[in-house]
Amino acid sequence: MREFTIQSNLAVDAAQFAAATSMHSVNWELAPIVRMTAPAAWKDCSLDQWETGRLLFKSWIFLFGFIPVDLHAFRLQEIYPGVGFQERSWSWMNREWSHRRMVVAHGHGCTVTDQVAVVGRFPILSALLMPVYKFVFRHRHRRLQNKYGKSDRAMFS
Image 1: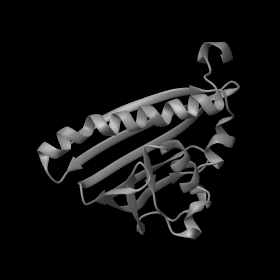
Image 2: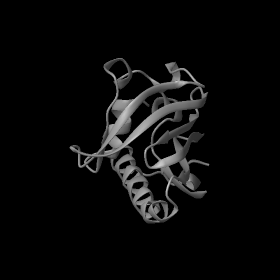
Image 3: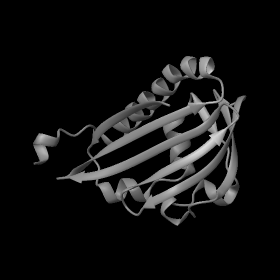
Image 4: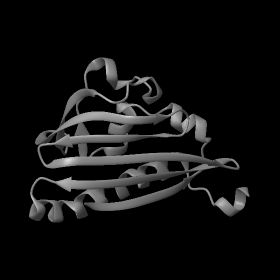
């Protein structure tokens, strides 16, 4: 299993940030590098309203918004209302895709932490894709920092 963690301190209320999480917000974070499809009913549905423990839908993953590169079977293992989620999905490329996002309040901002663990179907391909996954998550966090602003945790202690 290959894993990484990325964290950002954002100048936004934790509850406001967590409440805005949906497939629409995920695609905003990923743009313009990647786009994920979702049934219409799921696109703007707040993550807190999703079901856990079952396959919710399959999502095509498009590089640059139009080149299909994977089919992701989306399943949430657990939702932590107002705080985050634990996703345990699979895809054509990955036997297991585990993504945990936690949002922790601090003063007038929050810390967003993404933990990703991957078990690839093909070890060599998995090793080659891990730097790509890290790049995409760094991009997501840069987009969040540009949208909400960075916070200095010490500033809000």
